[in-house]
Image (tube, rainbow over the protein chains, first blue to last red):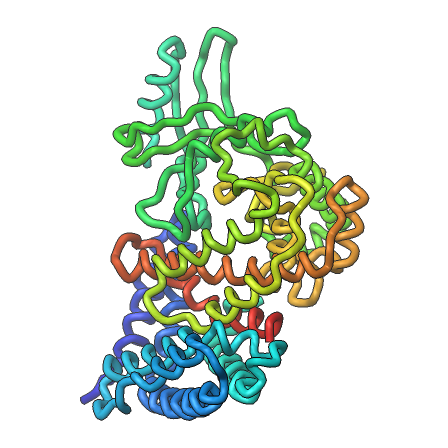
Length: 157
Length: 333
């Protein structure tokens, strides 16, 4: 039903600007007000696409981690085995479309990268980790693209 | 914080003073690690009438980082008269009953701190070259300061341990405070551990937040160096790495701190008596500084989510981190 939540947020923002902003006298209060307006903008930005964005991110991360796991199979040592085990223990694809479920899946996938970081990061210049290089390149590229997507331009110099 | 509370405290500190009056109490925006309040006060004492501006730095309910009032007070005291411009400090109060939380009071220095105005506004164009020189010269002086004069200064066990000590400190903070996995920072910590810089010749005073925006300036140049709450003993190049990160390039181009090129700043710093800057060490500290910057905001995010603060700045700073991650990946890929 209307108004949708994002429309309510815009209405709250407009109400605050109209009714409260003129009453603020201190510089500190004005600064807090400006921060709140920026935050309204930030939370509304990805409101509509949050679910499909997470589904796509989770799908892409699973592909990256599967490739990394395959590459790890060609690397000797306990660290490589532990990293493979961590990837192998990932939860299944979320059947729920709730944000909470998709976020939990997303966090598990990112955590798997964290657990493999000690092998992925040095793969660029360590010959014993050479099989991981393509996976490393792909993971770095995904992390970079993901970070760029989340950048809030007004907060970046 | 109100005038009555401050006046009561001044009466407590100066029982011999008469006619104590406090006015113009206002919280200064920013100060994400400690509340900063400005006020004017006047009184009559044994030395005659006193009138001036003051700053109260009060512990926050929650902040972007844990810091130590006593250290900051001790530093300001030790640095007075050193040639490093800092405000004179008056009183430190650990009893939270006066102003709700512990605080210290110092003199208010003249000048503005707005970084973007300094580097972009036409009215400040004529002092930018002077500020650039002073910024480098003062940093060299900070690094020459005798750390033995600041006993509270946190320090690694040896100069060789300077970089690992800082890595450990911030990795521990990240693990304590993060509410979600941080793959970019995990990769960065691995990179840092594999690219440790050569140890400094000796441990130096590191300001640890030295940048355009953390000093006051007026038409005479830099009037005061502020925000020492992260100061510690360590590798002096740490300060150069910090001041060079992209987040402080306020002019929107490659100029460090919005003021000059990287090479120019290093030349000015070395010419002023600073240590010789090793390029690999500088890159290490620049990566480290971006990582530290991101972790400071992770701590702020935790405070917000746990409901420990109503400061909206701490909510907003969380959204700076994607840009920092882009920068980190560009440096370590």
